[in-house]
Each structure stands twice: as C-alpha cells, then as structure tokens.
Amino acid sequence: MNKKATESILVCVNHPDFSKELIAYGKRLSLEMNLPLQVVNIQPSANGYCARGHEIELFYQQCKEAGAELTILFDDDFAGATAKFARKTGAKQVVTQLFSSESGGPDTFAEALHRLAPTLPISMVSVSGKIYHIYPNYRPRVFQKTSSVG
Image (tube, rainbow, N blue to C red; front, side, top):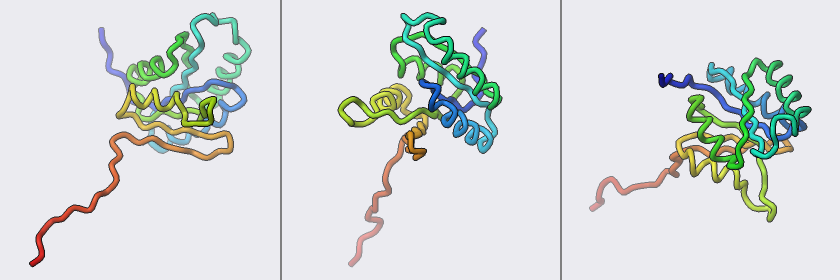
C-alpha cells in the first residue's frame, strides 16, 4: 500500500553542537506554516548504530524537546538520501547547516540536494546564525518591451 506523504518541514542534522539551532529554526518554520517537524540524521553506512550512539541520543533529546520526529538513516550518499527522505515525508522545505567546501567554495551538499530536488526550498543556517536560502524556480524580474513607441 502506497500511503501519501504528509507535508512537513525537514531539518537535516549532522553535529550535535549545532543541531539545536537548526531544530529551533525548523520549529519556527513548522509553527509559521502549521506543518509537522521531521528531523533526519544521515550516518555513513559503515558506522552502524552504535558508532555515534552518544550523538544520536543528543539528537533524540533535542527532537523530543521540539516535538519533532527523528529518523536516522545509514547511507553514503548524504544528498541522495536526504532528497529521497524529503520526497517520502512530503517536505515543503529543508533546513540544514551551511557547510563550505574544503576550498572555501560553495556548499556542495546544498548544491547536490538542489540538483536532486530542484523544486524544494532549502534554508542553510550558518554558525553565526545567518540564514541563506535556495528558492526553486527563482527568476529575476526582466523588463520586457510591451508596446512600440512612435
């Protein structure tokens, strides 16, 4: 039986030191949009459940406090697993930490997620608290000639 996903706000957590801020922003969005809050943590497939058990327990406690559901996935394709889970849960928006690549360039996780789920808005929260967004189908307004003069 293929059950239709309910719409939700999806928060991707990676490290417990910053997850509380991400979950808080996701909670704010979920209240504004009147949607349930889902939290996902994706572990490398080789880790196994106990490899980062203490961190997972912290995620669980933070989610419980926010009234969110926590899902742990084991997959080496973080962006791919996030995109699949976002579709499965009916995510209307994804919240994640803003990561910079090793070279100081753009966030490759967010870029990959946007390529895999181009219609999904992505909010990226920096360590300093600044929030950046990727909006789907954004097109700058272009002035068009509507009539001829003369």
